[in-house]
Image 1: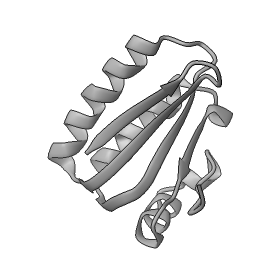
Image 2: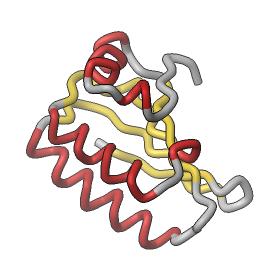
Image 3: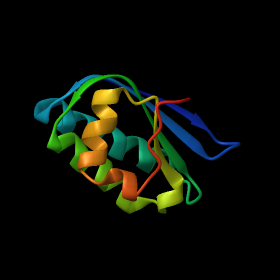
Image 4: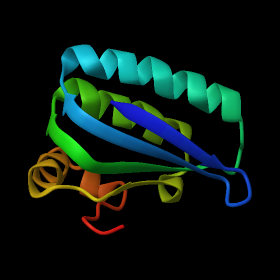
Amino acid sequence: MIAFHHDPLTHTLTCSISGRMDTDVASQVQREIDAKLAEVADPDLKVIFLMSGVEYIASAFMRVCLTVLKRLPPQHFKFLQCTPFVRKALTVAGFDTLVPISDEE
């Protein structure tokens, strides 16, 4: 589902996401991310979503991504290690105009 790694030296929160990000899972992921962002409470925080383990994303998960994006400057949020399916879904939804989307590390 989701695992976090916070590096206070680089002000980076890496969220390793895996599995199917359907409607039910997205609501739980939202709660976990909200709790982690509140715990870290760093105004210079950069958030990275590692998507290599994601098989499917629903619109509910895209809302989770928008919620995180709204809390940060656009240059402080990005998607990495996207599978072709995930990259296409994010691009069709317009995320590529807002934040970097990469299949690289």
